[in-house]
Length: 151
Image 1 (tube, rainbow, N blue to C red):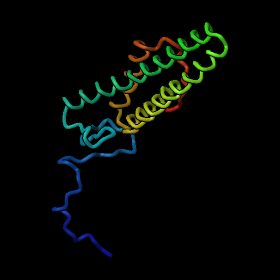
Image 2 (cartoon, helix red, strand yellow; image 1 turned 45 degrees about the vertical axis):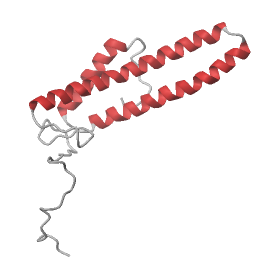
Image 3 (cartoon, rainbow, N blue to C red; image 1 turned 30 degrees about the vertical axis):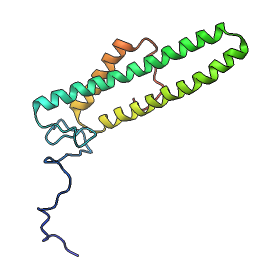
Image 4 (tube, one colour; image 1 turned 30 degrees about the horizontal axis):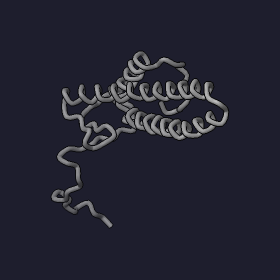
């Protein structure tokens, strides 16, 4: 069936007044750029700069979550060393839940950053790298080695 002559001009497809350009190839183009969500739409130079600052802050925040996790694990290990064996086992079991939550947050966060990178937009990719750099400088007290593959 040929639907080429049908008029779809009056239909509301939920694009909220703007279109999102989804690239599958590397680009520097920012026209109709939406970052992860349709509502995170770049409409000009000011919104591009704001979006890039947001990406930098989000990516730097990932390093903060990693540092919080490292500090929690270190403080728990120190605490367990000073406790009697039975109490240490209880503390270790309780801390495992918190460690699991922190790990889940890191995994979610890293996949979100991967989605940022998958806009295939060079500006967003650079902002991710700058955010990782700033985040590591500000919060990266541990090793630079990575444990999660997506960021």
